Image (cartoon, rainbow, N blue to C red; front, side):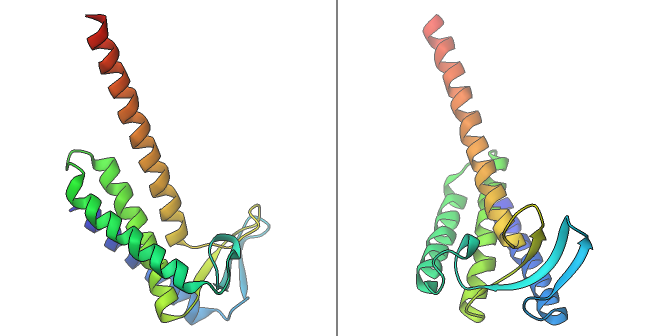
Length: 157
């Protein structure tokens, strides 16, 4: 259930914010929230992160579908007690759905988070994919450490 809640929650929040940006901004428009630190800037991104591979929409659509399918598969394979892993899967799936929706409906991804210390504009979906992957990496690391510890305890006996 946690995977589904996270996935739908991330997708919903991302969709609402993108609709607000599209309704209240014109492409290229910027609102300085914290001058020289954080702006809201409406960008229509035709590519991947950092605008890479612009115009290759089909690659991103296929990739997003594969990611969502992998998350759904993982939802049935990851034990319920592994809450961090399940939350991370939902975050990645919701982020993938958010950008997939944009690509299918708009043809480009709506980006709006503009931190002035970072040279690129991104969105909540992008952020959730990155945070979700980070949590997955942390969960794998913790599992490996626990496995190594239990293996060393068995070999010490």
